[in-house]
Length: 446
Ligand code: SF4
Ligand code: SF4
Image 1 (cartoon, helix red, strand yellow):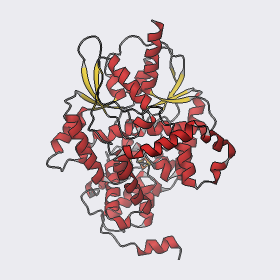
Image 2 (cartoon, helix red, strand yellow; image 1 turned 30 degrees about the vertical axis):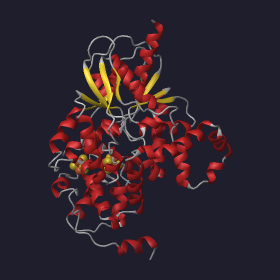
Image 3 (tube, protein in one colour; image 1 turned 135 degrees about the vertical axis):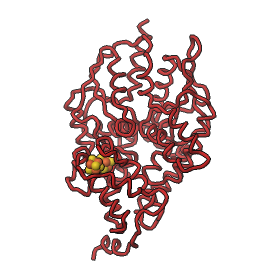
Image 4 (cartoon, protein in one colour; image 1 turned 180 degrees about the vertical axis):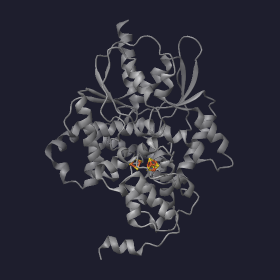
């Protein structure tokens, strides 16, 4: 008997997802097995097997829930390979709440620790230690910045030495985006319109990693919002949104972070909470669901979630101010899964791009297929993430675009790694960066 089958045989039988977060049978029975989601599922399209499809995974979870099968290593492996991209949820005619179901199943498997793979338990420890307290990452980020900017990175990459490193380290080195020259540390009121009272008081989520890797996206977001007449504030007591914890099954920690953010943001009495990272925005919009059984926070969580807007969603609802200069660039737009499928925001980023004079938007064949980033998926499932990235970069290359616009830091870093890996020219930007660029060019022309 192999090691794997021996371990599987010794796993204790389960009576289903018994804990408070487990998917209910009612939720699972909504799937009528029509199969309409199959050809939208990246893992099914790559592997072509039912157990790596939404329908197959739901069927497995239903069998566990009914006590017909135990939670074995094989069951966990099929659930683990899911990207949680929610493409299946967006196309399902029966309204299967796939994201909630998968997060709940993972939470129950992780809670009952001995059934969770070691990688899930390690992931929980890392996320709690560093992402819940991102200031702890500072020494690591300082070392990474030195590595990237001293010339050592270029030297090691050219020498081929990196191929001698263990696989996970090679993967980390390949994916790490450039550390910002200056992290985004602003707090309190960070921008106000110069002419007249503000039209909106906007609270901005700064997030755990964005301030260190994509500080310039926050800066562009603030400039844009101020141009549209908003007062922008960054609540100082905010913490990580908890999205990575949620996707990894750590709902307890996600709830703790959600409560802290609710306190931090509601105390600011803003008109709207704006987010420029799709994964974080989806998590914030679902705080109401996450805390629905919390007697102290349920109402506040619903109120909080109702205030949340993705930055593209918010800007597209405003009459954009004058002053956009032409940008003669061919751009293709990559839909972040947690913007397109979890939040249903697809038209707004495109409308903003098309508002820039001279910009040509060329669509990929499958702009809303996952690029393989999916939170920490590209670190824990590098092979599948690479297959999806290869497919994505072929799609990008077929457009002839010089610029890939998107709206989520995880997609941005994955697509940047894709350009490097396949030697493609061009750059990856957030939608707000292009708008900001057009306005700044307009300022220079005056
Ligand atoms: S999840 Fe929805 S689309 Fe997919 S098989 Fe079930 S009912 Fe059909
Ligand atoms: S969330 Fe994405 S990867 Fe997972 S089953 Fe649905 S479509 Fe497939």
